[in-house]
Amino acid sequence: MRFSGFSTFRAFLSLCCFIPFLSVGQEKPNVLMIYVDDLGYGDVGAYGATKIHTPHIDNLAAEGIRFTNGHAVAATCTPSRYALMTGQYPFRKSGTGVLPGDAALIIDTAQFTLPDLFQDQGYATAIIGKWHLGLGDQVEKNWNAAITPGPNEVGYGRSYIFPATADRVPTVFMDNHWVVGLDQDDPITVSYVEKVGNDPTGAENPELLKMKATPDHGHNQTIVNGIGRIGWMTGGTRARWVDEEVTLTFVDKAKAFIREQQGNPFFLSYHATEPHVPRMPSTMFKGKSGLGYRGDAILQLDHTVGELVKELKHQGVYDNTIIIFTSDNGPVLDDGYEDDAVTELNGHDPFGGLRGGKYSAFEAGTRVPFIISWPKGIEKGKVSDALVSQVDFLASFAHYFQVALPATQNMDSQNIWDAFAGKKRVGRGELVKSSGTFSLTSGPFKYIKPNKGQAVAKLTNIELGNSPKDQLYNLADDRGETRNLAEDQVQKTEEMKNRLEEILKN
Ligand code: NG6
Ligand code: CA
Image (cartoon, rainbow, N blue to C red):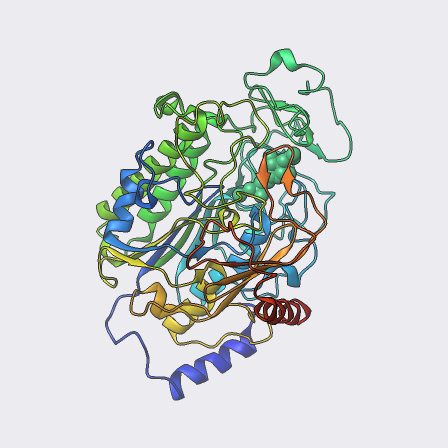
């Protein structure tokens, strides 16, 4: 426990000042956070997809609430995950952009986090899947020894992760502090500065690739499992994963964790890698969707959801488990490999009619599938258009447990428990989101701060929302952000611009 003084204060508050929310004898609900990678608003049936079938994800929506205005706070992975963990907007801390695979941990171990909250409530906590928030206290680290601090030092009692993204070295799993399958006679070295060892690289040995990298994207360094990665590694031959088995491994670990709890409440963060690149699903899903490997990866993700739900049911804990399903940022088709995501799209719209995509300040960058189910506590089949975001889980669960948060640390997380639980259709009043620039959403209006960056990303062909001019959209009647109202509504634009600057400064 890293906040003993604070916890005493918290205990005092809960004893003296609050009527406990949980009545005596009521079992604490488990929480399963299914946090996925690069899934678009339009990628699942519950959000309108017809070319791809996602019955298990759709079933979560049918059993709970589907949010139509739910957001990651950034259009890429690391900053969104930073906010999910800390309840803080990522711009409050430098170095929260997309991290290389050898980055140091970016969450201060003194920071109060979402898993800390559950741990303090007596929950068993675990993260299984993608991490991408850095490991150790410096870039230079020995991958052949225990690496700390990491997820276990910021609230997770158990972790089984991969360090960064599936396209970055080291392509290994970490079981708590250790790389899985270490062999001291074949030590692992990792670098993002220069080539290490003699392993073939995508740039030098393209004939060894089973899936080519799109030119200029940078996935042409060390080849692992026939796929060129970002970064160089050598050694750890037996520790390297096979992409087709990554999800099988995570699902197995997640099921085991659920099984082991035996009635103890748990908070499990299952951080899926789908449909992030490289899309290399298990054999049973290859070719199944008819939409190329991106579609197949989504089918694999849906299958995972089904497997996790099945395990919860098998253990008799499904009814009292809150399942949250959401994505760290929006969709991208060509993110660096020739996987036919563009050519085999077959009329599927991952963007769900929204503008932009991953990396973008437009809505498709951050408005993502956002579903919460809890058979015992939430009415079935609801749809809510309340403005909700992932940064709010911390304050909302703190409210649920009737504990106060350290005001200075979690200043951006808001208690919107009633929106999450489907009791009110009102969520946040305003929300700041980060991409290459910043936007402020307030009521129906969205303002995007001028930025000199590219309007369209050359590599991914995504409109980034960058413009040298102010942009103001009314999402209530223009969710596709097609009409810039900044010149017509000068006063509103000025008001939102000033408010955004005020938040960014604090
Ligand atoms: C980008 C990578 C992309 C992906 C992304 C991170 C290039 C050109 N592109 O820099 O392939 O790895 O970073 O994705 O290197 S995220 O979902 O983890 O933020
Ligand atoms: Ca992502």
